[in-house]
Image 1 (tube, one colour):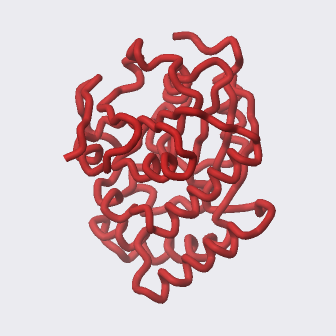
Image 2 (cartoon, rainbow, N blue to C red):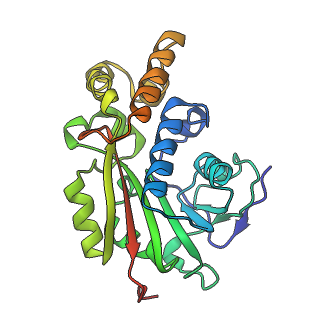
Length: 259
């Protein structure tokens, strides 16, 4: 069992536990999101020395980032069951409610990651503001979210998504939080036809089966197609104008935020 430090009390979260069993570091979507994040950090010339992944769940994104950037990445979540699934790494794992604003955690990180987290939160602005308090002045926040409300369906409902986002939504969120937008890119353009098919198909699938059916490729052939789509799109030297997901980088002002 992975060692977890308790800074807050564990509690239930708006996230389907089954997703953690499926979202391994070998899953095509996890690799795709990681490739987009690394490309955008590199393109922006950002070289963090440490990071905090808020809502890290079972720690797969944290593990991948530690490997690829060779930095310490701490992770926090309120879901103890998910945290106990995580592999040990360079950083620590915490049961931690960011609204508790633990003094030892505030202003401690170069990079804060919110990887498919804020779409689960009722008040995404308040959550973002609490997350920003853990950044050093001038620190970077990286956010990934599902894109386009037109794609919202049963999968989103069962996964605990309150909404999907547009670039304008994220720009507005950053302005309200006094974050300077560095870049906002959509990714997963080649997945869009599959997501429309998924939305229609899941209408006939029970809620109990929606996560597995909607996230796990149905057999080796579909898995191979998805992997080849990932390789094709991530090999392009430019970002495509639309996608199934959206990744944004923002910078906290040098004056920081209120603690």
